[in-house]
Each structure stands twice: as C-alpha cells, then as structure tokens.
Image (cartoon, rainbow, N blue to C red; front, side):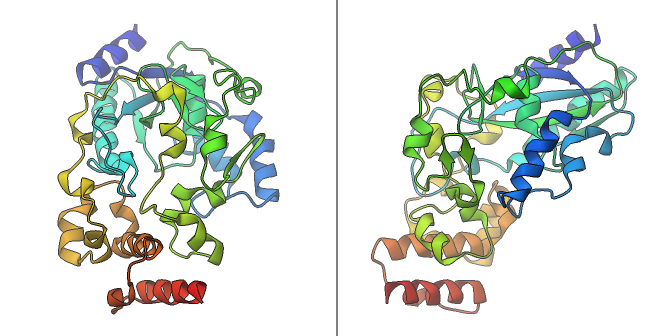
Length: 328
C-alpha cells in the first residue's frame, strides 16, 4: 500500500520511472571495486573508500528501502553539437533532481517515515541500484537504459526507514552478460577514445571525464578533440535511444545560450556571463576556466590562433603553452 502511494505521488509531480530495492550492503561489488583500484582504473571523482560505495547504511543507519527514480532529460529537439553534452544544456540537474527528491521525502514524512535524498552527494552505485530496482538494464557503455527514455536519464535515490516490499530484479552476474545489448557493439565501435572495450572500460580516457579534469596530461590534449563538456557519442549511436519518449520535465529544455555555435563565446567567457548563464547549468560546477580551456583546445584543433586568449588565468596560459609545444 505504501509503495503504491509513493508511486502515485511521484506520478503526480511528473515522475513515472520509479523502482524499489532493499537497503542492503552490495557485497557482490566489493571484489569488483577492489580490482578496479588495483588496476588503477579509478579516477579523481570516485570515492576511494569501498565501504562508502557498497553500504547505503553509511548514509542512513536505519535505512530499510532505497527508492530509485529516473529523470529523463532529452527534449526531442535536434541537438546542436557545439561540444556540450545534451545533459548540460538545461538547468543544473543536481538542483532540479534534488528539488523533486525533496518533495518525495516530504511526502514520505507524511506517511510516517524518515527519508534522505541522494543525487551526486554519495558514492553508491546508482546505475546498479536502478537496475536492481527494475528501472532499466545496464549497457556495454555502462549506462542505465530505460525502456521509455533510453539512457537519457539522470538518476536520484531516496533512502527511507520504511519497510517496503520489493525484490531485486537481477544480479551482478547478469549485468556482466549485457544480454539487453545482444551482439550490438555500437558504443564500443564508436567510442572516440576507446574507453569502452570488450570486457573492460577505462573511465580515465573517457572524453566526458577528460573534459571535466582540472589538470590535463599530454595524452588528454590529444584525446579531448572538439569536446567542451561531456560526450554523447556512445548514447547517440545506441539503438536503444533511437525512438525514445521525450522528457516532460521542463527544467531540462535547452537554454538558448547553450546552443550557440560561436565557440569564441565560451573561449572568451567572462565572470558576468558565467555567473548569469553557465553557472545555472550542469557544467557550471566545474568553473569558468575549465570550459574556456576546452573551448580553446577545440579552436586550436580547428586551426584558430589561440594566442589572443592569453590573460590572467594560469590554467588558460598553461593550456596555450602546452598546445604550442604539441604543435612544435
């Protein structure tokens, strides 16, 4: 009964992809994470404490149930490929998703339960949780793929002390079979940096990850190519994303300035434009100069003179120096 009430409430605020699993330690992932650590496949955004990655009770000691909710963001418009991932073009999903989760948590409080919202504020395996909760499958590109919206979804979780009847929809062993992908290797074949490989993924050379790094290696400068923030190639080429429903969440409608093809706007980004515009998007958290740097790299790759972008920023000047060295 409680489950049905929560689902009905979520539907009333525009959320239609919801799942439930028991709040438990994901012991089956421990060896997987330890092996990734040993092989040096972790990146700077990952939690090094494995316990925080597999134990949701770290976040709520008396948690009984995890609610997984998908937030579709593809608005069905023809995407202007200006180097920004589709997910960055609407309002900041961190704030948007959290605002919806807060509403659901408040409703759970009215049902007599405690609840906490989680969106990028934790280290739990949200895609795996979504899979176990029946929201979708996990593809070879490690994205959670929903039936309605494909992989164009953000994920949010709620941990509650309410005991809600539910069962896992699969196992970790089944995830690794990628049965939902069949013989398709589109993401593997089209990944520009070969981050996605058969039997192994290396997030450290993923284009999306590289665009978000503060410090770039010599190899990174070559791999980033024309990307400014994020990468959609593995999603755009995925057959599961060919005929997906569009999002009904208006907060993710692309903001006009995020579709400009004038890359000089981003390369010359000033504090005023950043604060009034890009800081409201999902790429704003990384700061102005990361966006500027990546835009300058793109312009360099397009044959532009980048010396004119030198100024007071050590990051930008270092970038120009590195590109000049690479050219020589």
